[in-house]
Length: 287
Ligand SMILES: [Zn+2]
Image 1 (cartoon, rainbow, N blue to C red):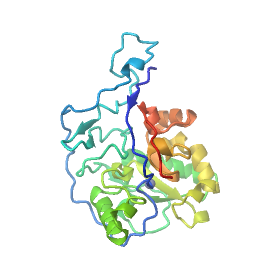
Image 2: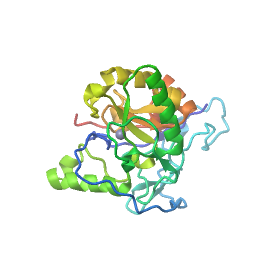
Image 3: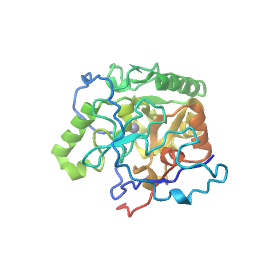
Image 4: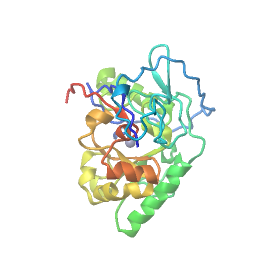
């Protein structure tokens, strides 16, 4: 298959935690009032033309010009660009939707079919963050069923998070430590994958249900790394891929993409960015 060589420079000057860090937050959960159809705008132009297009080898399809023969969503064609240069995602309901520091979910995007998966949580309240898109919730139940059969103490900690809630979290943190500091551990609203309803943070008693890097070395963390793809999930922010994803290693953050895609991504040791043909130009990191 031909791979696109879209170049998107992802800012890695500051590598932030992926918007799902264990943020001490006093805010009460509340229903998101912005349940609307997501506006899918026409392309407004302004997307950057791929400067490396002519470097495509195109062995299999020399006549192929630009359009995808991969069956994968084109990162360039799944955003609109606002007047101030912000990229807003248009394929919001695609299981392969790419959300990162360059690509924002619309502020009013709420997945239409959020449900609470029947999986263990370390708390009992029915908080909104228990929710996932139905397709991801079903997959999570299968994943946790297998974990239980294998005797793995795996718990879900956080799924869906609304734009408004992410904004509240970010604002609260910014008021506490200043916006710049807050940026280091709290994602901008619209840039958290949790708003998609396809991301799920998992944890275990071994790390006291926290979302910490040590989770990756626990029995549950190792099991997840070896098995999540069988149920359609990937480790979204792998170790060693920080300059590509723009985020630190987060062994707890799972992202549903579907079984076939997860299998390929896992087998090829890829990030979602790489899988979708986004070639990242590394820039100096402050790490
Ligand atoms: Zn997360």
